[in-house]
Amino acid sequence: MEQARPTFPLVPLLAVCAGYFMVILDVTVINVAVPQIGAELSASLTGIQWITDGYTIVFAGALLAGGALGDRVGNRRIFSIGVVVFTVASIGCAVAWTTEVLIALRLLEGLGAALIVPGSLALLQQTYASPDHRARAFGLWGGIAGAAACAGPIVGGLLTGTVGWRWVFLINVPIGIACLILTATRVGASARRPGRSIDWPAQAAVVAAIVLVVGALNEAGEQGWTSPLVLTAFAIAAVAVGAFVLRERFAASPVLPLSMLRTPAIAGAATIGLLFNLAFYSMIFTASLSFQHEEGFGPVVTGVALLPAMITTVFASVLSGRLARRTGHRTLMTIGLLIGASGLTAWAALEPHPEYWLLVVPMMAAGFGTSFTLTGATTTIMSAAPEEFSGTASALFNTARQIGSAAGVALSGSLLVSLDFDVGLRISMVIGATAFLAGAVLTRLTIPAPAEPALSVSSR
Image 1 (cartoon, one colour):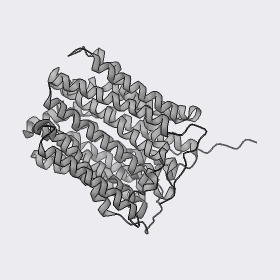
Image 2 (cartoon, one colour):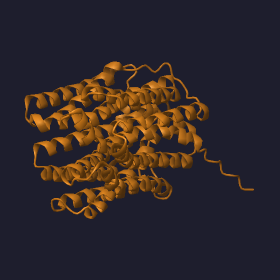
Image 3 (tube, one colour):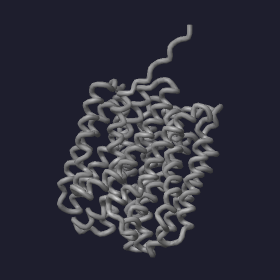
Image 4 (tube, one colour):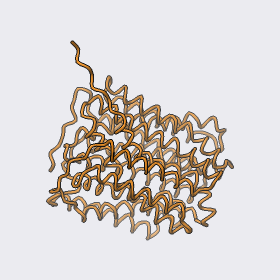
């Protein structure tokens, strides 16, 4: 008699993904709202970049600490603390009265996000033990990310155009409360490893490097690419990276064991995540500004205009999770990245101020390529990492992705400021297409073929 297949528990997935939904929603919901925020708070374009990127910088910079804390005291506990911090910070953002206050509270939101995201993947890894269930869970996790990215411009546009931009932050409050209740009641407690200490000097070096690089990219548009401030920031960032590597090499309990970075599947998946996020979020930021500043679209129309790219991300994540069981991840990731590259290349080749319908396919291609690649990259890096470092592996992957997002937005914003808008837009699209292509090459070199297991690494 054939044994019944184990059922797929859905509620733990919904609990974990509710927190992740908030985090990703706040990446995209802000893009449509920033013109109105800038007008009401008298923010410059650089201030707008910091409102958008400040969240992402802290998010990316603190992810490794969030992953290590989850491994040490339990991923469910750190995940829940992150949801509380994020929800409270969202309320603060909604009542911010100056650009500086809003930026500060966006930084706090980023800290909450950095505690939520590593725990989300680690909790899925813990809850779904079988490879099929795990692949399905990661695919749906990616689909939730796509749904959040999809909802962001629409929700942001509707709220900004009706009740005002402050409500784009208040929308997080009911989601956060629901997430806390479901996590406490339907997600199992996580193992604690109290012997795992946090390497704070290394963490400080990571934060410094990310803040300096993204800050330099943000300021380059107004200060100039060769200004002493920008060049000094890049130089100190390089020193911070060197200090991090040196510290991790000799630390008794590294925040990121360097042996993980020597594993091709882990290093490759993390770098690919950085590249496709750089391309996609650069495109979203540039398109949002173009539609509102150059084409005269209102917030609601801009949200609708971005919808094709966002809807495609949901479809692509779910599809890749299903197809991966048959083909493996390497082929799917390569196809997705090449499709993304072709979409941004086509956009760069269009005449200035093209008709909107000509942009639909390029936007959909970029969204499809990003999400079609996400599931494979996520599964690869989580499978290759040792179980006791699942939070750290999740943090590494998401740190790389958020660095890509922040760098893409900062670079695009500086190009739009320092060059003619159309020229800056075209260069941004070319850079995004190049990032997709580089990811495709790296996929062929580092992601295991279906018959090859992604070798796990030791804790050192």
